[in-house]
Image 1 (cartoon, rainbow, N blue to C red):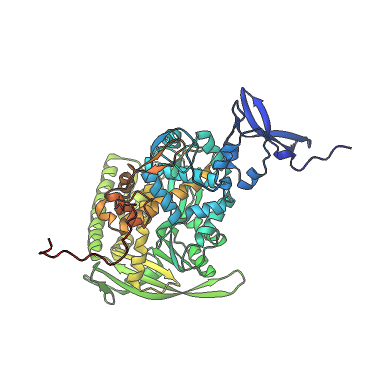
Image 2 (image 1 turned 30 degrees about the vertical axis):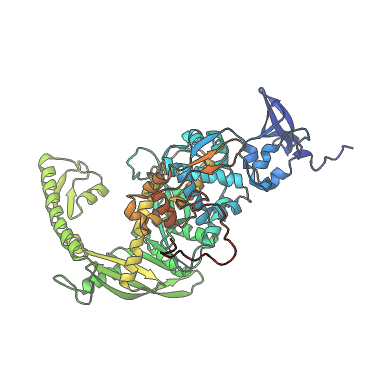
Length: 596
């Protein structure tokens, strides 16, 4: 009868010599799927030097604290390096034990404080089971593109001159393993934690952008329309921002050829599973469709969406105004924006799956910009003239036509007839219905809302907040250097998007503070704030406590705007530490002029 294995045998650490290295490893058993036999594999937790000093490696950094605590090291090994981790730190004053360093720290320090202030560090700790080292690695990866705009290949070199949250080199191979460790469960758990930080009736702006991808093996890669004009396949990245707290709370990837309107149902399901409640969805016209409208009503989901003016109810309202000079009868004017507006209700009925009919009342907000109306009508006349000139030229030169969809787009104000075989133009005439409709709706735009108790102008101002989202996408593609996906595996893509989400949270908050405080008058952009802080240094000498150089000038203003406490000893004001003792008894009388 075989001896039963000890329960702790898989956690006893021993030396595994391979390729000239001494690894601290454990042997873990597993069953081979093909043969069904029990086999063993080495897990390398780090290396050993000649004096049996344990140096933690990648597996140790990525392991949870509970898993680290199960490891049983030989008694003659020096495992003092493991005590530097937050889970096993001993109380007392920390003394630096490595080489003397003098590294930049100010911009990283500010972003670390922002991570604490917006709660993203606390949320990441909860997601990754209080693994502080893994969280520090993720925050370092999130900070690096914000302050450098470089790719991760330069990160280890950057860590030599900059003090980062992570205490070890983040090499490309380590980053690959870290990103592949992040799963869909981690993503959803982070969403649940972020959802709890939202208030009631938060405005959630949903929009998408395309990103070029190098990895052609990714499932979501398709030859959709590349907005960057690069000859690469693309994926569609959807991000939801709160227009109240001004930071992202949700993201998802879709195939590059997925229309926005078709992705909305998946987004709503995701938000529901993540615990987002009492939110108001704000979208542009790309997400407007009859299917989405009925989905909103059946789910009771409040929304604000920009609508097409050729929608039946909107177009009928515009036609009811009849001919007018400047202002239609029944529309009011906003003196600040100088646009006309009106709001009216529209009843809508939706048949549910159980056969019941649900009635809803939509608020349709119609606006007219007279300046824009005049410019658009002039443009219509100009387009008609240019299109007619091009048609005459093609007939004279015998130029064949493009495909039907292209012809309708190029000559949208004309009905063109051509020979189906030779595709030569035989004749054309003006499409009076299209011209009349274009002139009728010029200058008008509409916003439809459901279960939102706002008047027309309040709805308009809330919708305009969505414009900030475009600037965040610009930051993602420009400042954060995430305009292209530089990963080739599905696991790596999941982790990279997770880290990008953390980066967007940090940079969005910095931008929000810059826009809403006196920093907007001092600095031209949010990046200038980080540049101003960069000169602050953290100096660490062997067996001494670290110290940070003083905060001066605008650096103090930045901390005040962010409501962040300056480290002890770094404030510009100084108070003597000398203790003055008052003499006992009655104070001496001041000398009179005669006594002097």
